[in-house]
Length: 353
Image 1: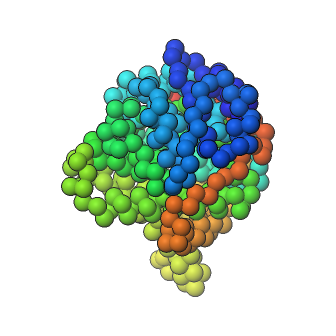
Image 2: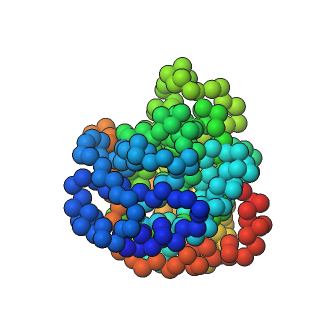
Image 3: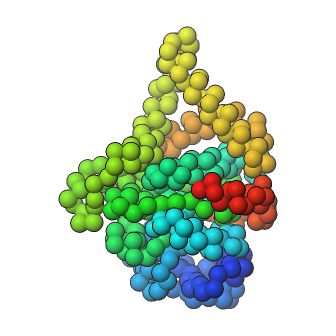
């Protein structure tokens, strides 16, 4: 991954960039490949928990930039993304600006469904929430953060497996606002069901952690916490506990609907599926993916339920276990293909955020 990552970072257009690679102390394979890395390298000392947010917190101690952005090793951000993100931050007054994450390669059905899920989330849901000034969960990468705001809420939670979701809640509780910039970062999606499940287990386990932490601890537990508007609390509730309850109840709903296909629950379930399938089909058309893939959403939902069951077990027996996702397995389509139709009418898409 290192040569491609170095090329992507070198291509970024911004007057002053402090680019740092964080690598674990015992990752000898990556450290051996650093001949291709033209920027600063920070070796993260061995310690526990072995998580990404712990490494990022170490990087924060050794960098100086007023705006901080985190990229994963497989990320390929658009060349002008830093300028657009900072401009959006200045224009909106937001303390964090989230870019668009998108699958940058072809793959089997599970990969294509992952790509559609990301398209709906980052090109539809998050811009919608941003337009109405509502808080939203951040992506794991391509979030441009005001350092002062980040540090004021305690930086990243090293023990949370979705440090991005946890940070979004803490920023919202502290009164900071978030926005979206429709600039794409290409990412590598899981290319097998096993890889997808491993990744999703980690995400769902982190969502449960975030829900428990912020649901059980009173506001007085955080010196920086402020009263939140009801609509902000509802927006975060829909994205965290409500989403988890929906995933958990899906198998039960399917079983009841099959046993009583004429009942109100079956009608409600089918109606919800039809609406979701139409939404995903529209997203598929916009990003140049097969629209028929959206018909597999019921099966995809069953995968979510299975991943949630594993996440609950892991939360009890191994709460900080970080299931890593293998990367470098596919060839990216390139930034132009990832951006798709967004390359046309940039002014219009900027206004959409």
